[in-house]
Length: 430
Image (cartoon, rainbow, N blue to C red; front, side, top):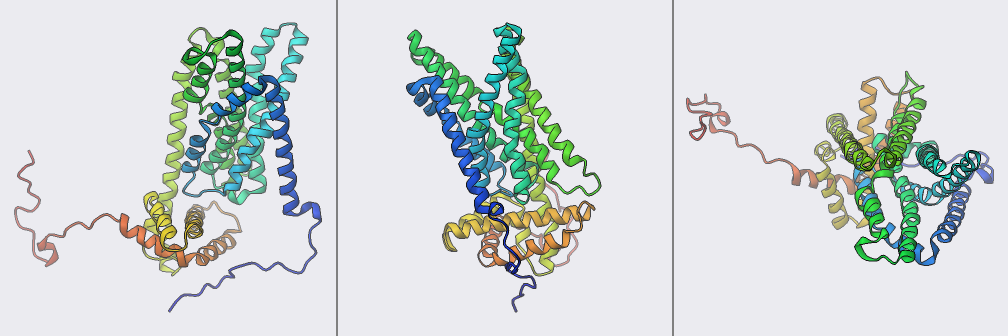
């Protein structure tokens, strides 16, 4: 007999008064979209004014090259509990439009003011690049992470999710900045008559899009990790919810300042900072984030069997939900046999909710949840129950396809006989 869910499948709003029009969701979304569109038009005009139309088009064509694979890398990193695409679209738009506009205006104003006050334009440029720009740019990019943290807290799934949002924001910012740098480089080539691989444009593209496309994302990911740590329930130390984001932002500013100031460290300063600090930091941070993702998979495998015993999940689901390969097979199977893309999206949502349920229970056993544990657990179980028809068969299929082959049982163990003297002997072992 099928088990029926004791929890309501949907929430019916009450008959209370409707919120004022300025607090409705569509109004907030419309205002935000208008702000980003206006910022995009202004930054477009400013960049085009500095580079010229031809330089702008060349810079745009070259700057878009690293964007798809950077975005795909952050989406791949966050595929255990992927956030909605609308969050990533907002993050990219904020970085490319609003953050870039704030940075270009504030940096220009600050550098001009310092040059006027000190009568030293070269010193003002150095100070602006190493002190002003890191503070302004990282603060502008962090604003997008803060907005998601405040208004989409449930979509903020921890350090990995925070890193994905921050990384996509920085990718958008670097995209606009690269248009400016590459467009100006093209204008320099036009004025001095250089072309091909020895041009300023080719050198700028190699440094910014080939050698260091991860620079801006690396800085801002530190801020995202800080917000991700702050999003984790910490009943006994709420002050950490402030210290983690602030600490991540300060680290991002410091790393950004070191990167911008590398040119002042001598003839090989850039290569020393790049090879001795940036590349190792990038590798270490990537390893830590992947390890955190693997921990989430392990927690899902260990915590979900209790819901199998209660009848909420199928017997094979904890194994499948603890494997990235099985999750991918489940999505593909649902897409082919259970309704195309909508079914695959339902499986993705099912996998994400199940992982969050496992992490919630893991934190509860460690005493790190608040009074809303039971409410959130019921919400997640109800969400899983709604999607069980298409998700459970897909996950069971994936579990069968990825399960390790059974080890053969020796005949003496199968029939209860004692092991012969030669059991375990390998004549080829030296």
